[in-house]
Length: 232
Image (cartoon, rainbow, N blue to C red):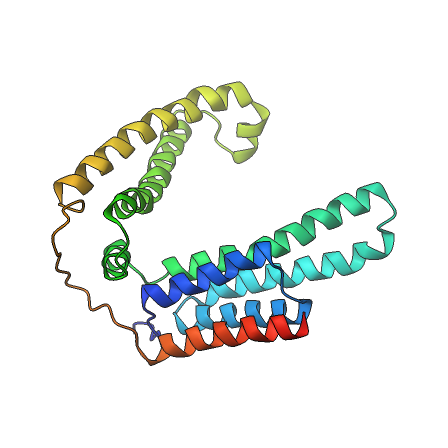
């Protein structure tokens, strides 16, 4: 049986990313931060990514627990350093969660259609298209290189990669960089060959329109901004 999930328009997901990014520059009060992360967790569940959302949510509370345990010893240099790392990662986590939610159940072609509907300049759409398609190919190349190394008995475990940094650079970093250059050129040529830079009107097989759940999500984000400003 296939999982039942609520789909969201890429534009409402983009609003979620923008709001999470603003939190890095203008942090919300602690209560509002918890509410926003809980909202993201609920969005993961609705979007059919319960396991991924639970992992993110558990990490968030682990950061809070670590901060609570280390804060009484903030006068100690080591405790202050680790507490700074925990708080910094906790501030960054909502943006990572929002980005993961945005990419879940949303195809690259849907993002392209949504950006075109928002009248984003083609000079920005083409690089973003290449970027979106680059990372899956990059990770696939990295996985192929690791499988080839394991097949030849080179750096079989992850620990070996750190124990032999020069060997890692020779067998992984150099091939990955060369593959990344070729991949970026191929993706750029493919994007231009498909006419993404053509300024005329384009058609799309995907229906891009805001639905009830999108309006509710955008409304909750606006209420969150007003609530955070009021109690801040």
